[in-house]
Length: 301
Image (tube, rainbow, N blue to C red):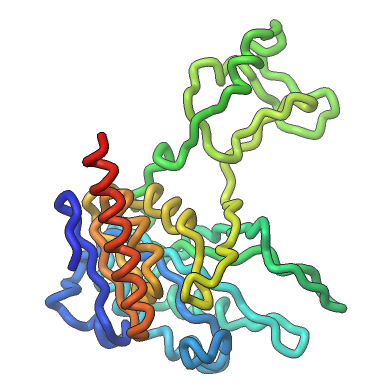
């Protein structure tokens, strides 16, 4: 276990379907947020052994059952996953998994699209480049913790220039000249210091984009000792949105500890489970290096 400013991080070795049953580590309703990416069916078999699509749901059911038990009533579960293509057709095991989880009591709140801006190129005769993955959002009840303000970003220097040349039309709602966009009122943005990432004013057309469920994040381009490592920005966004400082974040397929690093940076307690010892070794090294870096920065101030 690692501690930094009263925040703990630990990675347990073993199968999550077994470890999650341990009441010492995982009391009922003890986790605020689960962010994870389970092994995809029949993908990267050398790393994780692989689970056939036709038995994936049966394999995942006891895991999602335990996750339901350990998650707090106002908590959230985020699953990053994408069906593979086999014999020219998309598999349906993720859809089947969603339906089975709803039978367990889960509410399927949202599906976020992780748009991988620099996805691996490719060409197929019956489909195009695969540039997105699914991030499925589940909860135990309709009222759950979400802080949308936490994922806003600075509005940017363009606003100062734009607001210096306000016209009377900017103070009333009206449709854009080409009638392609919803009505907007530019003056509503005068006092804003932060916006959602997709709230962008386009000067030529002068329209605003509402916050969306599409996350534009580039995938990890180097191996980083793991065959399926997602970028640090992905768990960071969900941790900011769906948890508070000192909350407990769980990743039952923690890999090399990307969710752990995001949790440390954002001052959340972290518990990970991983069955591959070499990944655990890398995760612990990554956590140690991060804490060392944070301590060095603190000393330099």
